[in-house]
Amino acid sequence: NTDLFSELKEIVPEHQERVKKLRKEHGNVELGKITADMVLGGMRGMTALLWLGSAVDPDEGIRFRGMTIPDCQKALPGAFPGGEPLPEAVLWLLLTGKIPSKEQVDSLAAELRSRATIPDYAYKAIDALPVSAHAMTQFTTGVMALQVQSEFQKAYEGGIAKARYWEPTYEDSLNLIARLPSIAAYIYRRKYKDGKIIPMDDSLDYGANYAHMLGFDDPEMLEFMRLYISIHSDHEGGNVSSHTAHLVASPLSDPYLAFAAALNGLAGPLHGLANQEVLRWIRSIVAEFGTPDISKEQLSDYIHKTLNSGQVVPGYGHGVLRKTDPRYTCQREFALKHLPNDPLFQLVSKIKEVVPPILTKLGKVKNPWPNVDAHSGVLLNYYGLTEENYYTVLFGVSRSIGVGPQLIWDRALGLALERPKSVTLEKLEALCGIS
Ligand code: NMX
Ligand code: MLT
Image (tube, rainbow, N blue to C red; front, side, top):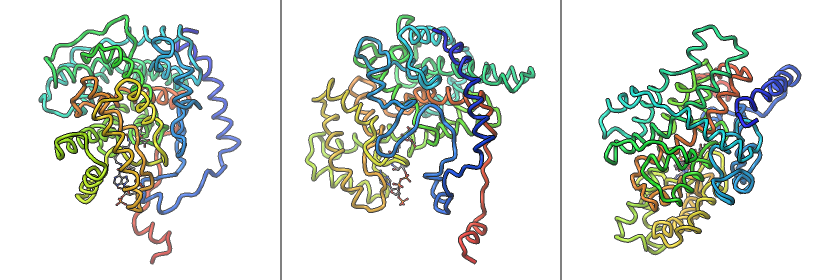
């Protein structure tokens, strides 16, 4: 099959059987215990979600359908031989669990382009906001306007049977993924440039087209965008944006409603907004010393200043990871290849040497190592995308490629409305033996 829907249709029944069997024959298997600390500590370590596309190992990091980032770089089709994985290839992999051929990826790229028509009212909804509104506020508004065209909502109102819910969810998810770059680029052009739309180029793939519509055509930037979108697509199900999408979709809210909610979670500084915060922080270091070429002692002083003022070091630490994020590492490798002498890249490298021992010394930080956000800003900045308040929008576009497939599986597998139990403080104290 070169058609993704036909490919998926073949594997849905087998997955449905596996889940049915699991529930019927193994539903009582215990996956761990729930402690009071988990209830108070953001549910860290509590296994409570099914997520097909990817899993995060604390030491090794992300695997997309069992494949590490270097595996994906080797096995997934790129725009040219040896190129970075195409986001379309990642989408195919996450949804089906299979490595696509170049022909399948090209067909999916063409399908996404054909789905990318934006209704005029979506632009008008964004235009109703002041240009000064944060790019993420404008982005969520645009996604909510796209919701007007939800196929799932229409089908549900038309009385579609539960067994077929996944089909209009597929339509919505693919349309959403296809349309996000145009909406996102519109916001960038409106907020930072001349406001004129740069039309999609039918000869370009998803990542390259997004860069092109933003106004960037340097082949190296196009290649970085492919890598950027691919590595930010998915990070298992428990991160704030993915979990939010799954939660909001669980009462059968359509993918647009679910994804807009996910974006609002991504816009938090401890999650996706951290990429903005990192570049802002790096710039503040340069402003303090008047140059990026500073000593480790000066850097150490500045990091202590940040911590002493009650702020976190952005781009460091993680809810699951306990080693350097492999998404940081592959961006570093990209930078070493293409911009080894960039002063901000060199500063980022120095930060990686100085921050971990300082965070470790605090005694409370579980992971002193850099995450994905510690690196992306300096690469974007190097290629001319200097407006850091836009960076989380790039993360948001990318995340649709992980969230969209799971929303389809949520409906195909008939996953339940999410509704965990909560406890009052008094009850929690009582459960802990405090009277
Ligand atoms: N700088 C300073 N303090 C930190 C940092 C950091 N980078 N990371 C963790 N801590 C503190 C944390 O605030 C907490 O302090 P307290 O007990 O006083 O509240 C303590 O260390 C224990 O936190 P952890 O258990 O290590 O981390 P947790 O799982 O709660 O939080 C993050 C994970 C990612 C929210 C946290 O490491 C952080 O705030 N990092 C900086 C922001 C960031 O880079 N976020 C991006 C994450 C990736 N993404 O894209 O979503
Ligand atoms: C993500 O990509 O979602 C972040 O690394 C945060 C997380 O996994 O919790």
